[in-house]
Length: 251
Image (cartoon, rainbow, N blue to C red; front, side, top):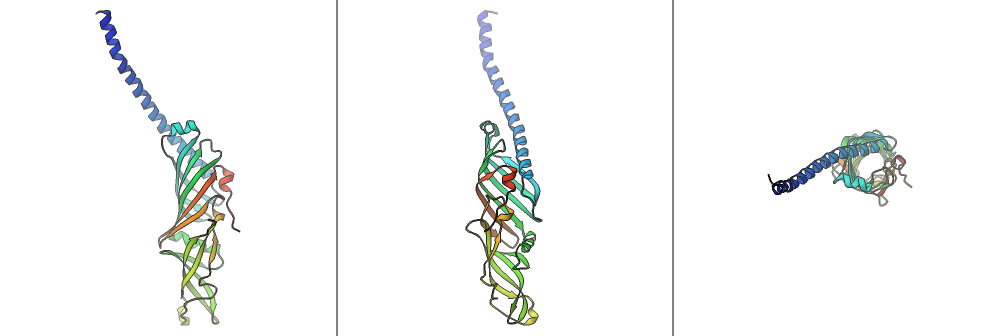
């Protein structure tokens, strides 16, 4: 075999060697990405669980969007999706679905542009009545809520149910319930009224800030008879135990 023939064969092998190396590196990167993604997702979920506000418990899952290796090298994750179907806040069960951006890999600093939804089933909403002395019970109806309570009308002690609209307050720290249509529920009295003084058209302020990290604001509500979905947002949110456990206040 001539030297020229041997040299020619070696030249033909080089592309195959290069392709093999590239394939091996690609496989290693895929494996590394898969492993690192699982680790990153678990770490974020654990950090959120450990930093939940006092009185809040539950399991969460997290998922970092995009390819994580370059994001890890950069020091922040572009987008992280955090969900939980099993959160309990002050004894009230709910579900949460939140997306955050620019999440620091080291767990220090702020996340940005937080946008999420908190969902309460109709069976959970009745527990909220304990946070207002103005009514005894609250249930969901399409487009709003129905409040039950007691009052005095023309000398009679009555029980009533008042349907009302629910809106987020402008500062995002609470919601406002305004009772509208009213019906008497102890019908044996034979009373029929269209309104009850002190109840009808009297806004009821409910502070939601005391359940949420201080930077989160309530922006919108979508209510049906089956569930209530509350949209919450924050421009920035500290990604540490103190920041997440510090709840807001209402004036």
